Every structure is written in C-alpha cells, then in structure tokens.
Image (cartoon, rainbow, N blue to C red; front, side, top):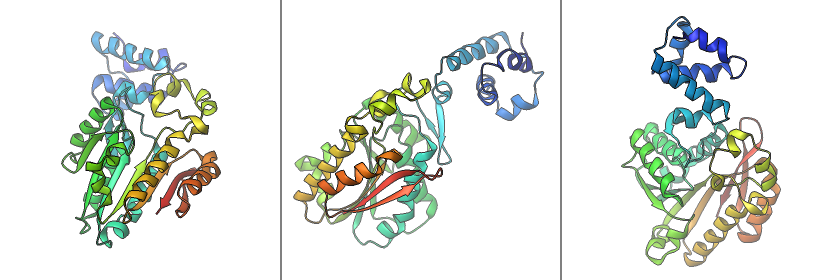
Length: 300
C-alpha cells in the first residue's frame, strides 16, 4: 500500500502539487494541512484506488471544482457540477459593486427594491449578496431577492447552495430565459410597482474566437451554453437590454440598475449597444483585481 509520499513521487511531474494535495485530502476526508504534515501516512487499498481515479480525471483536464464537487466564492462554499459554470474570482467584483451600492439603493431609498440575478447558475452571486445583507446588520428590510436560470438542472444546484448557506428562505428561484417570466402580464407587476430593481447578470459572453482558445479544462467540461454567445459574445446581453426596454416602455416608474460581467475587450462594443437600445442610460465600468474591465454598470 502506498504512502502519501509515494503518491507524490509517482505524480509530481504530471500534476500540480496543490492539486495533488487537494485530491489526496479529499480522498482521506482530511484537511490539506494533514496531507502536508503526514507524508508517511499509509493509505488503505480503497483510498489508494480512489486517489488514482481522481488523479486520472485531473490528468484528463477535468476541473478541480468538478472533481471535488465544490468551489469557494466570496468566502463561501458552493456545490458545482457539470450543469453549472464554475464560479471565478473575477466575478467577485460584480458582487462587490452591488454591495457597495446596497445601502444607498435599499437603505436610503424609500421604494421597495427587487434584486434579480439572471443566469444564476450555481447561485453564487445572489447567495453572496444575500449573505452580505444579513452580515451587514443594516436596517434593510424593504427588498426581495429573485434568481432565474433557463436550466432546471442549474436551478437545482442553486437551491442546494442556498440551503447550504442558510439563505434558502431569502431567495425565490424561477425558471426563465432572462426576464421572460417578468414580461408576462401577471409577473410584470413585480417590476412595475413603485420600486427600484437591481439586476445582476453573468451571462455567456465568450465570442467563438475566444471560446476556441480556452483551456481544455473549460472547453471540454464546463457547459458551453453558459460560456458561448454569438455577436462577438454579446448576443445574450443585447437580448437582455431589449427586454429591459420593453419593461421600461410598459412601466413609466421602472427604475433599474444593472451589473453585467463582461470580457475586457467588449467595453466599447457593449457601450455602443447600450446607447443604441437605452439611450438615456448612465454607463459606468469597473475593473477587476487584475485591473481589467470586468463589470458594466447601467442605470436608468
């Protein structure tokens, strides 16, 4: 039977050491620190077999998040599987942008506020926002949290994550293609009432060219429908903006603030599209930690 050290010696030229540590720790159901500090620990035959299976999956470029079944985002743990996009650190700036305006929009605004996360996937954005509202202990009560996704399988994962992070009573999940459910006469009243609406969206935004150049971890495993968009990666956002315009035409009191995650090179193109569809909107862009344009903020 192999020790932890034996496994490292066998695979250190093939896999990143951190990946090896995490895979072994996952098999042993121990923290990574245990793996580092106990190189002479002897694994059982079953543990050795499981570890080799996990390593073989990683050698085929399957993402670590799918192998481990979870990913950390904004200090929280989220279940993920092949039906959801893996949460990424650059998306945290979107959450931060919303949170920085929450007290202003919700706390000082006397109107009711609806926060909608579109294409919610694993639910990482809306759940992180919900946790921050609770954590802030601000006197914020006049709001509701909604999340939608076109994929029923993704919504199941998002609901599990809401329960895992103890905010399942705070968020209502809906199956919808972007804002379609709200464009129905019955549901539109949610947005047309005297209220402010905050929309967050990390929709598919990779162009065909960029998608083809992505790493095998992404291209061969993550759901293509959550990554690829035509029209230089902006088809989904164009559709969303057109839906917003329809609601605005129906509801004179409709006030909305959108936070859209984009690819940095899309900044001039999306700005042009926004102005053509919503000419009176105010547009602001935010950079991620790598100092690249990452979030487009639109206010109407």
